[in-house]
Image 1 (cartoon, rainbow, N blue to C red):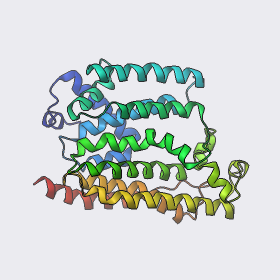
Image 2 (spheres, rainbow, N blue to C red):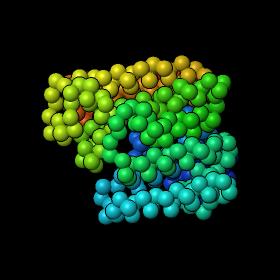
Image 3 (spheres, rainbow, N blue to C red):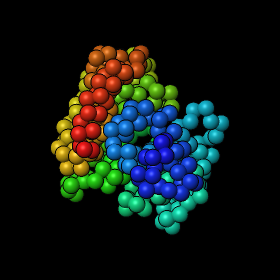
Image 4 (cartoon, one colour):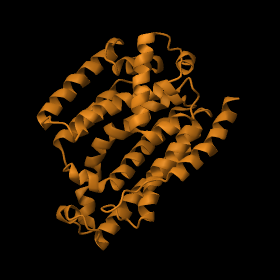
Length: 302
């Protein structure tokens, strides 16, 4: 991260700067589309978003590292140990952890409620023991912590013009997560997980065995269409909330909305063949959206 951006953000301490830089590198390496969107924010806001990402990514790595030799129980213990320490650091507003230092600074500066991070860690813990959800309401308990609270964490940094910006932010976070679930049906099966509600499977006479066979059938295709419709409904509900953010924050969130929700458009483009292909927003489209929003972002900074 350019030191100038950190200085503009009021981050002067060299050790704290290193923590923010570590979070930025995690974002750049593991969240390329998200990282691209953050470049549309004013430089002084970017480090704080990287800090939120760094926390989420590190926790997710404990849970989902397929190369790890740790057992689920060992992962649960590692997550609890690290998570408990981070929460304690947040309450004490001080940390020596390489990731949590930046997070604590961000949460303190922007007065982000600690319960959002408690909810996130709870959902990460659920991933270690729960492999399926009976209804969407059951699934929502998970996605609230894994996705909705990400939107809630972001809003203070994005400087809302009204408290009404929070509910749409939750909807957009959940839309992002559900879009990923649809794209990653095949990969999640590798992890022994099904994130499509079992009640939805039953609605279309699809069984877990049908999904595990990894062959697209007319019934599975209709199921995926149904799940895509839910993503698009959430996206539609979230869009008015973007106008409730500070103008300098809007291009970033608009770009993220287009690219992340656009995943389901790509699923449709590959004719729902999620077992054989990975739906992916093309580099050309990502660059087109970024360039378009870049000039808009510059106008808002002037």
